Length: 477
Image (cartoon, rainbow, N blue to C red; front, side, top):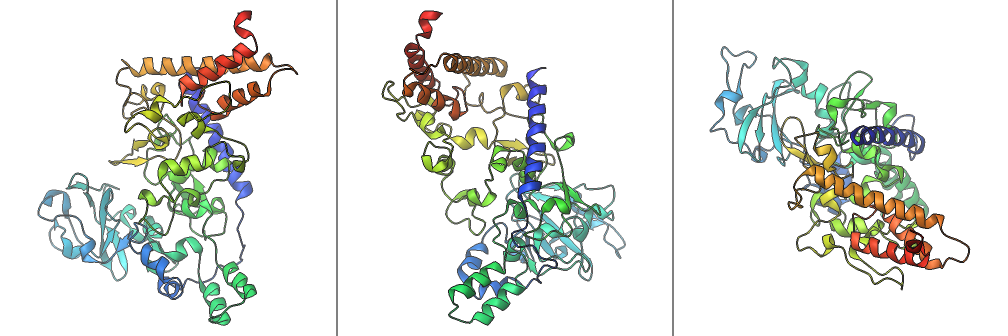
């Protein structure tokens, strides 16, 4: 079996395992036969004023706006792209800002616009503003603008509003606000009001139990994913925070190859959850909110809870508090692990403006329709895979320009990792009851780092040299 087929098969197995784990472990925090009604963010702000205020400035809050000032597009160009035949009008014409009822999206990548076809009925206009290019481009969702693909309520609304009513096609809040993640607040508000200004500890417990905590990754997955509901809509009809997402939503899997690159990274927008489900993070029950702060973007980019490198190494370290040690930070930075070997920082760590965890493990990949997205598959793109996908940049040769080709880079990676694997296996086979404890410590350190020499080749090589000397393995060769 060639390396690409093996990688793809491994990805499918991981994704299936991830879906199985999700189905087993993701039960509602407080199951309810009928979810409570939505009350709107204005009610939430009565008690949670500061949280709502900072949330107002996030991309989530601005996923839908009727504020004319939110329009980023220029209407001085692109008449040909914006030309549309409006219902009730005699001739086609370019749509203008006056035709825009709602702005869809903050414009991080693109911005789209809604037209009110009838009272409280909206259709996505067939051109979008490419923010990076500063130009209009056609938004071709179907052959005709009258096609249901442009129907806002049927195809888009759920993930851009809060408290969406499927029967009436109405919603509580423009944008993604509190109850989109915490569920309807009716019971929570009633309990708080009944308790009054000075609730007891028991009353506080009841108040908090009346709302979903919003930390379940399925809450994020209801919109940051691709899939279909039972009635064919591209969002989970009937899901509410605290429920099991896959009860109402069939997620896209790796077998649907039009959604994925051969590397196992998503090639469509809004697939962060699809990627995450198949990752080791999901299997280790690391939730989205362990890394992202859903309430604010003020402190760190991408709503991270702390600086990216500090965030990764807060878990990927050898601290006993982590349970099963994962000494990536110690290997990467070259921190001491045994007295017999002088610690040596990795060349990547020492390089000025060099790579960090995110450089290789949260790669940016192109998506269909234009632009690119940060992947949540949490895996590098290997040179071997990039050789088969011309659109992808592998995680190595963009920096290692001294290597003549991706194929040679892959050969170097394979040689290092295969050699490290072999040396660890050989050393473990030679261990006896009289072997010094530090030998096992060194072997565990190199193996649990997981990169098999890539994070810090010089240090891992020195540790294995010391192990071989202690076990007299060089003399046996």
